[in-house]
Image 1 (tube, rainbow, N blue to C red):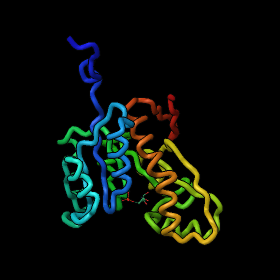
Image 2 (image 1 turned 90 degrees about the vertical axis):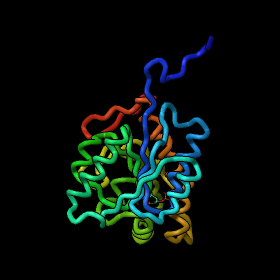
Image 3 (image 1 turned 60 degrees about the vertical axis):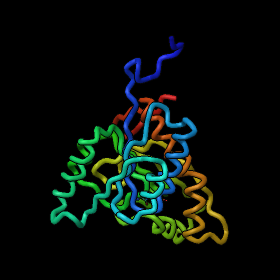
Amino acid sequence: TKALLLPEEVGMKKTKIAVFVSGGGTNLQALIDAQNRGEIKNGKISLVVSSNPNAYALERAKNNSIATEVIRRKDYAEFDEYDSAVTELLKSKDVDLVVLAGFMTILGKQFISAFENRIINIHPSLIPSFCGEGYYGLRVHEEALNRGVKVTGATAHFVNEVCDGGPIIIQKAVEIQNGDTPEILQKRVMEQAEWKILPRAVSLFCEDKIIVKDNKTEILD
Ligand code: GAR
């Protein structure tokens, strides 16, 4: 006889997580490492979707025996066809949570509404600063340095139809230092903020500890 029942045996289904990537995938790696440490409570990364067949993130998935799919915007004539294809793919895999971890392709209305409050994005600034259309990757850090802010950071948030406008889940501040370049700042923001708050936000979702109301969240912790 077993002394303890597993969560799935008492009817608690593990949250199936799909991670969307486009590049190096260090945020995907942070999620995998957190999962291996048991810090993604009640969730499992079951799929990695890349917009780019050459993304190093795909190697990280394969090294950890995670299934992969590549879906490219340019393989569809119309944006709506791309939107439908992404939506169908994710529905066919029974995915409960989508995590955008450095995903550089805009997603469509159909997909966003099919996964309302079930898509988490990591953005490399303190929203609402340095965000919205055109603010991605190194550009965000260039603009922060151009403006001369003294503090920046990262934000984990739900995705809605407004670019970087969905409910904020966690933010973490990072100080700017003398001599920072966009590359140096990007690395500090990743290490001190992104790689910590993204796995934390994902775990909170899987533990059902995030309440969304009026485009805001309340964290039950
Ligand atoms: C990360 O800094 C992430 O916050 C950013 O792209 C980088 C991806 O790195 N995302 C955006 O700018 C989204 N607007 P990674 O592939 O090593 O995780």
